[in-house]
Length: 106
Image (tube, rainbow, N blue to C red; front, side):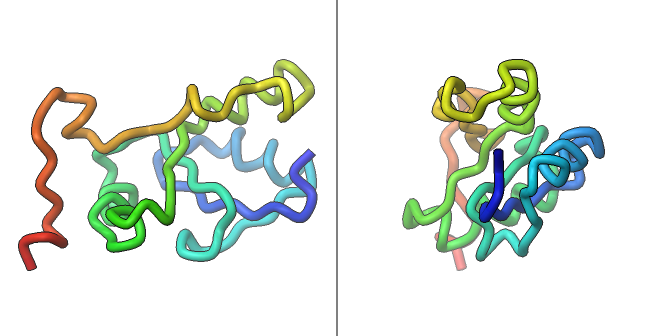
């Protein structure tokens, strides 16, 4: 299902999601080169680092919730799952606050 695709996994993503990715022929990569970025905690330091990056601020990367993989597993398909429903915004958005990334302040 994920053959020729790469993913980066936050430390907040459970091993079962990572194992599923690998069992479906997906491989892992650094977040800067991965096709997909997965996290389950927008406030996790490794995910926060992505939200504060210039790549994120210039819309070059998107972080998805690891539950996307659970949905794919349940449906036995990646095409029948709308990945847009699994976009994981920064914690400040989830909390209803204004986001001022530290990258802009440096």
